[in-house]
Length: 105
Image (cartoon, rainbow, N blue to C red; front, side, top):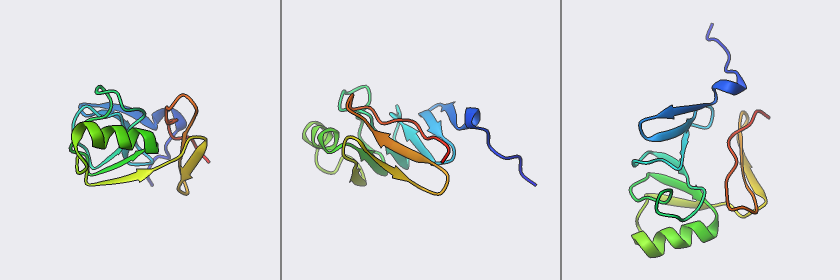
């Protein structure tokens, strides 16, 4: 039987950036990844080449203006003070423009 994940093991540093194991996404990755949560539009966070991007509408607009409308395979907008969840994780965007890390539901 596989060992259950502990909350402390959910976020793991990788070569591409911080990886959320239960959500299977990277947070502000340095390199193109299949699934990215981009916390804000600064160039050290918003980079091209990701398969799918989850970000605020404002961050998506900045990315598309700076990097081109097809700088990622797809975009999903998540408004401030809202959230997105699966059976095991949750991601939310807050006033600072920063998406929270996953947390156990």
